[in-house]
Length: 133
Image 1 (tube, rainbow, N blue to C red):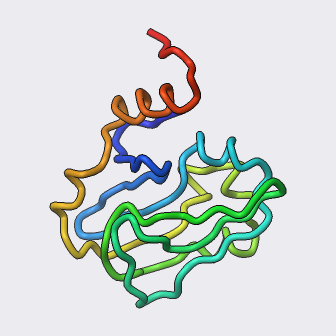
Image 2 (tube, rainbow, N blue to C red; image 1 turned 180 degrees about the vertical axis):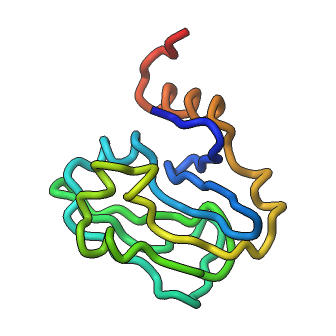
């Protein structure tokens, strides 16, 4: 499932831009690859994140994985619900399972992200599956 209206990174994060604030999370594809998420570590409000640099960690029963910020800016809010109930990342990656809200430092960075169609092609290549038409 790759929702329209979002931008995506090659590292499997999604971004929803609303004015100068971007909501960030991991994609449905990423949470499926991880398996059951049991722990989420996120930066605090006010911390700076840099595009494509690690912003935190998501641990599953299979492995711990860095989460990379698709945008640069200041953390405006972190999803405390996900820290308390990490399974929200699996249950609702695009709604209740979002990770951070970031005040954008450079809207130009958005041009380096993937459209929904480009991301679908990217995960098709990653999984070796043919795209469905």
